[in-house]
Image 1: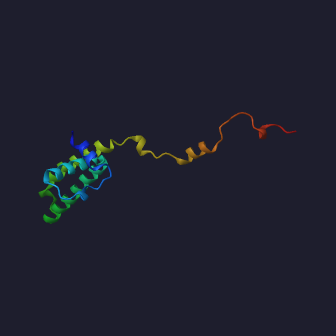
Image 2: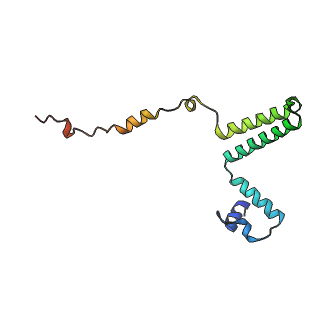
Image 3: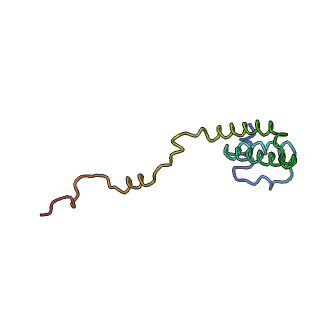
Length: 125
């Protein structure tokens, strides 16, 4: 039985893992891996971006603003963050850049569809 289905059986989807008492290191690692697989790709990207910003800020602080001392790390890790962004959210397209007008959609919804002649269309004279 693989790890993911075993944890689903043992703890259920919404069960509290920590209520069952002490566990050993192997079970803890398996549970952490199970939880990591359950994260969404967007959450993983934002976690990656947060770590990048935090560590680059720390390097900038420790080097007294001298960016050239850690430039290769920042540059290549930045490329990794950019590739991760494109793998999660995709390439920006022209359709995504142009906002849709909500007014056009509202007008189409407000207009009744033609279902034939209406009593107000008839000549009453």
